[in-house]
Length: 145
Image (cartoon, rainbow, N blue to C red):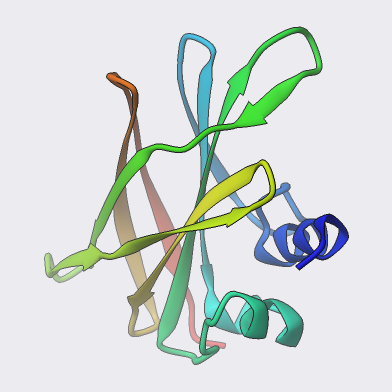
């Protein structure tokens, strides 16, 4: 996959703040973690294929990217240990396996999960970058389509 296709994939995944996508931010010093949860059906066919995600009404995708801010306007994506889970409205706990995706100097994390719309999931995402912890907690509604 070329850097151009990677950027197109990130746009399709919502990692760059695409319209309609809600992203959640956690920060610790120069580190920032941006997390999004979206229905897998919102992925383009190309992104679904490239990232091996099966679009289905009962599946969601968690995206995580971690950057280190250097000089103004210069941020680099950095690797981390990432753990994720969610809780349904009925207090069922979901463990979300997260896999690392690398392309050139870019690294980000994807996690697939089951959801039965309509539901609202409360997510908890923890990351560790060389002893620096990052934590994001947020809720995301998954309405019937």
